[in-house]
Length: 152
Image (cartoon, rainbow, N blue to C red; front, side, top):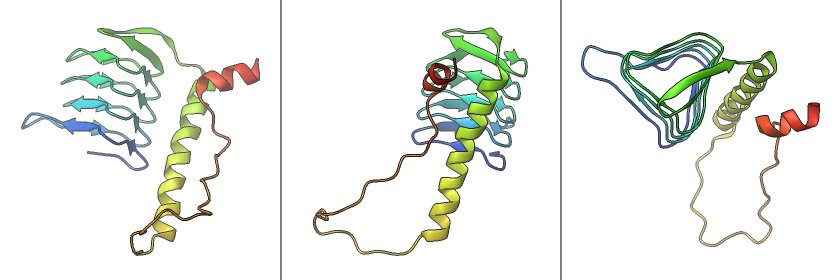
């Protein structure tokens, strides 16, 4: 089950055994290439790129899982936990600033989906690259590393 406002990016696998669900709760954010197998990702949690979360894992709300982390089956992660490594371990609590950053990033993806649906029209494929094709404007959303540098 994928909850309202959740974001499952490209090349992810969401799968489970019969009789077990794979769940991404409301506003969950699953990074590129992550694998979720029979687990629950809590509300407003973030799973980093290429992370693997196994059967029976319960990832608490507002937690952040680092890229390429591996969470062993049946692991229970408390809310607001920063989880990294292989095998993954909780290293600290997620800060209010990090939760705000995550929430804002997910909101950006939600807006992109709304914009796409509002402006989607059928088109013919291009026969050649347009000479004056405009680029996409960048938003003011920045990486967590950049946000840390600019606020200290």
